[in-house]
Amino acid sequence: MQKQAIHPHITRDKNISRGSPVIVGTRTRVLDIVIEYEYLGITPDEIVDAHPHLTLPQVHDALSFYYEHCEELDTEIKERKGKIEDLRRSLAHGTAD
Image 1 (tube, helix red, strand yellow):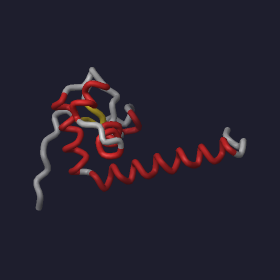
Image 2 (cartoon, rainbow, N blue to C red):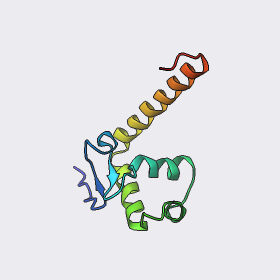
Image 3 (cartoon, one colour):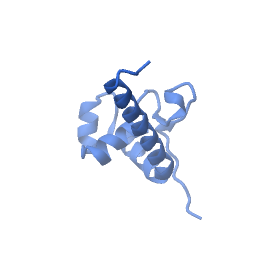
Image 4 (cartoon, helix red, strand yellow):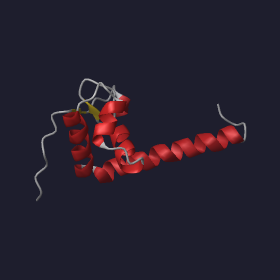
């Protein structure tokens, strides 16, 4: 059994980002950090430069949290991508509410 790390910079609150994990004291989702790092190739230092309210330890903790919960968070990313695609299709066909 693998022991999970303690993540002092990460919290979940159902009233913030629908319970998606965020960096403590912010509304910055772990997913946002992951997308920038994993999908856009932005380094942790560049993420901090782009989001001056974050610190390097917070960004690294977000990435560490992701790697421990990647299956759950990858599912959330896929669901959000699907919703975006559905919205794009409905807007293209003029059926968005």
